Length: 482
Image (tube, rainbow, N blue to C red):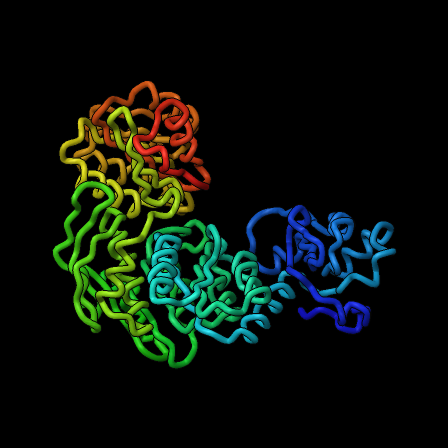
């Protein structure tokens, strides 16, 4: 698993590496390039077939990379072109494992606080809220960019500490999609001081087999935290609440509906983008004005608040931080258009609970809307019952009070047909997000309130792109980012 030190040219040992890269297109002068290949991906439980990047080692050296880490068997296959670079190659049995071990070493040298966040939904939003709250307390915070939350994304993030060790804390999202102990592996790279558990939902059941298996996989975060650390648990999710038994140290609970250490009371939504609630914490109470909408986002805010409490912040300090939060891209963005309609862009991910939660957000804030339109992509990785789940979700949508359901791709047809059968008068199904977007831009009327919700694989952001091509935002400074 380790790099073969005996195979490293002594001249390399005195060279200063500027950064580390796994993408030859991003290599810069002074970088060390890690050439990944299919055996590493398989050994480290990545699904799918991946390109052998050993063939890009020469390109990396042409961009002035200092060194490259390669598998010896891959080197033998590419000896003709790599032979002249042999003194700049570092051989490893498993390049991904070497990359992760390097990240662990950088973490050990840095040796400061890790806040790790996992859950079936809301990880990125909760991570961003937590990082924001801690930054407002004066700390310098490292966090994953985008959703870099797996066995490659997390090390990429952590290796930034080799370039800048001045960060006070790292807030790291940790994800999983297989039964191969991905979160446990991530915890070995950066053992959490704070283990934040958001929820357990029937996501990735296709690979894990049951929601109980999902819960066991998520619980690896609490099991993997440092002795004496703090588990931050959602008291409103019974499977998460049960993880208290696994805590190796302190526990801080948060919730809305169940007794908890950190709670939100008197939650009200004054239109989209303005949620009010009273924050109750062991460190005092405060009134919060929050720019994200929906109960699920209040829970995400409470998770961030619980971490803030663990760092000794007062309720007033946390409330002040939450007041300045902006929604992450494609996760509940509120887009107001000059033509008088509003779109909620929640295109990043979807599952039945998340979809229905966002629909409730639509209904809570849309009392005066002309029509409440839901654009929903098919939901992925739901296992053997996927058709049944889509049909059950369609029935719930029909009963919810929305006016129009547009389904996108494959299994979403089950959802729209079920909703129509349950009495929803207006439904449409489209094979792609681009087709749905073309239809919708001809259908929108002033006063409409539209939710666009989908998994990344369905690319529902293309619906948003179509709308933005035709209609102007009310405030042109609003941005829609990847």
